[in-house]
Amino acid sequence: MKGNIAQLMQQAQKMQEGLKQAQEELANLEVTGQAGGGMVEVTLSGRHEVRGIRIDPGATDDVEMLEDLVAAAFNDAVNRVQEASQEKMSGLTGGMPVPPGFTLP
Image (cartoon, rainbow, N blue to C red):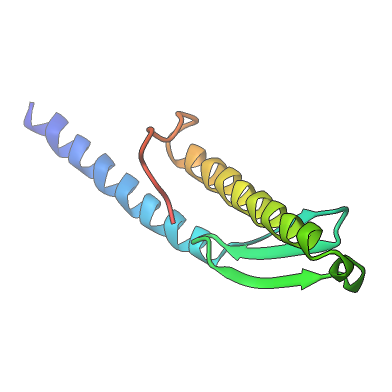
């Protein structure tokens, strides 16, 4: 029985180390979301920090449309960060989904 507990603790420690490394890798990740056929691009880090925004000069003619494009590009980038996080974590969890409410950077 003691051997099983020790083995279980070792596995938990390895998983914790793997999660820490994955979180660090995700923090350094950069993804770019687009809207308007690439007229607006938003680049985010894995921690959802904005790293850059690129706006095509032609998109500045209509401020309301530009606001919508920036919001759509940001949402696209957020979705890409989440997809990358889930993909990274599924490798650590053996394909099991990340539990609801468990947030990653």
